[in-house]
View 1 (cartoon, each protein chain N blue to C red):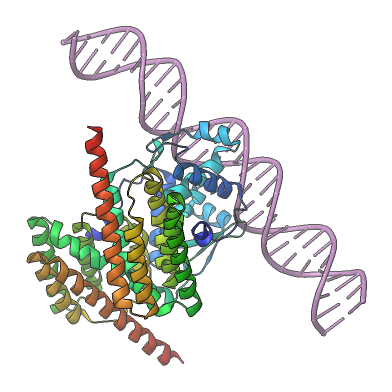
View 2 (cartoon, rainbow over the protein chains, first blue to last red; view 1 turned 90 degrees about the horizontal axis):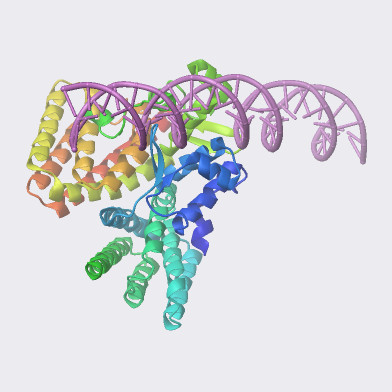
Amino acid sequence: MAFLTACKLHEPVTIADKLFLDLRRAILEGEIPAGKKISEPELASAYGVSRGSLREAIGKLENCNLVTRKPNIGARIIGFSTEQMMEIYQVREAMEGMAARLAADNMSEEEVTRLRRILDRHREQIEKHQDYSQQDVDLDFHFSIIQGSKNSRLIRMLCQDLYDLVRFYRFRLKSGFNRSEQAYQEHNLIVSAIERRDGEMAETLMRHHIRASQDNARKTLEAMSQAQS
Amino acid sequence: MAFLTACKLHEPVTIADKLFLDLRRAILEGEIPAGKKISEPELASAYGVSRGSLREAIGKLENCNLVTRKPNIGARIIGFSTEQMMEIYQVREAMEGMAARLAADNMSEEEVTRLRRILDRHREQIEKHQDYSQQDVDLDFHFSIIQGSKNSRLIRMLCQDLYDLVRFYRFRLKSGFNRSEQAYQEHNLIVSAIERRDGEMAETLMRHHIRASQDNARKTLEAMSQAQS
DNA sequence: TAACTTGATAATGTCAACAATGTCAGGATG
DNA sequence: CATCCTGACATTGTTGACATTATCAAGTTA
């Protein structure tokens, strides 16, 4: 799971940092339910830390867009919203499209080789029907290309500001959207374009790929909401 | 200066919020020099607040990417870096291109009219040779289109995470890049595309416009560095 | 009954003191 | 002379107590 360590910079030396990582994991994996109000005294005693450290950690969670705070009222975990999910896809289309374009220019030969190897892993896990691992491999794929852009600002905004949200939604819909085969084919085309150093094509294909994911997610959500009603 | 109020959500009710806005302005306008280390005791006594409130404000500044923090070492104002500036242009090209595309679809007729009016103001100030006000009008133009995208995530990432950096660099280079006339013409084409509801063209033109700004900034910086040596 | 006031309660914001960590000058050692 | 300890100092991290603000139920009034 290279994507987990790919972005966080320094080891969590301070209490607030460790707490931040703990809480982030708890939110992403659904231990703390979406939309829940955070009670500072409660959480602080639950984790055995002071409110000050907790507030610092909450501040960091706010940067990751996982909680929202209102002055004198408090913080709460973000809610689940189809509209927001669609908005995130639009932003990803723009930014990851650019990332793919830059990656075609800036990735080293070794990095391209590693990228191809991630794709092979994807192939294997499709044949083994390991649906769960495919999500990790998909994240690895996207992270590798983002990193390959060599644009530190782009990397930061995607990995630090947006991808926690992506993981938040992905975990809560992990049953849905199975389009591994199609996604694999699209990934394959993107890697080929990068191998040819064709940035223009890499951007076009990445945007197409993310738009296809978006369409698939939208249809899955519509089917789910119809099944419920 | 609509761009100033355009993005900040709630009034600064708390001390930490007011302090944050004060410090942000001080950094953006160069009162606190770039790259300077922040001494918590010093700043706290200078503004007459406790270290706790100051630390909260510093946390918010970190979100705006205006300061960086290292655990057990401290915070410092970001430094001036040509490379980072070029990276920001690349991110803007991707995100504002998408914003223009969405704005063409989603702006109301009234918003388009207001956008056209901002352009007229730009025209006036070119003829009056008010170079300083042109920067404001330029920011207003870009903010209006970003807002017009109606994508709250995109708005947030641009206005809250990226544009403070844009203003940081812009203020420190305000003498340079005078290309008002050319910028005006490019803005004009973009507005025309939005008026025609041609999203594809609006995106293309916006990306061209930002790339042209980037080229101009790069050349200006190269000329400046050669003049110094 | 509905709408408004009021007071008790609990939450968040703020502060100053304490603990832990990093910094740096001065001296000892090879 | 360079390098490595060492200890005093300053800064950051952490905590618990206090101040301020929201919340909500009980009571009052039209």
